[in-house]
Length: 174
Image 1 (cartoon, helix red, strand yellow):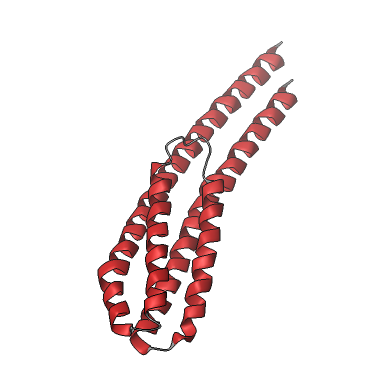
Image 2: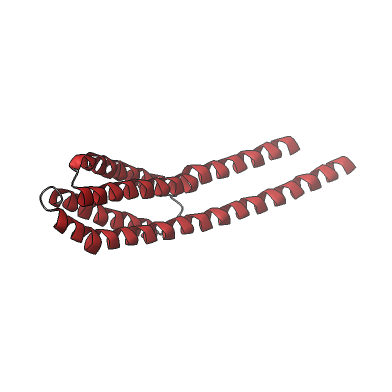
């Protein structure tokens, strides 16, 4: 009975930690990937506006496509037990807003670099700042929830260990 109880406890722990890795850690990794992708796209877009060399537009477009895929993966990896998706939605919405502006600037930069540079300063940079703030808020929320779940699992493990030790002690006495 003690061995079976221990195996059940270990399986519950394994499933809990697998869930943390599959959802919380994965979502935070995808948030970081989004940040990398939009920063690379923004840097290349800025470089095109400053230099006039439109060859970097291919990189901008590919990073915007990657960003779209990463956002979809992030939404599907988001922990199901967190019913409040407002921070996730805020991050996705700010990224979608920035992506639309980046695509518009990518078209404008082909014909009018000065206007594109103005758009980067007046529209793109504030949207990028909003995306960064939303990403930070989402990542912090996930880390807090992850820490809470880990503490809860540790408490459950400690209680289960004491129960098993108690049962072993009683069984030994009997």
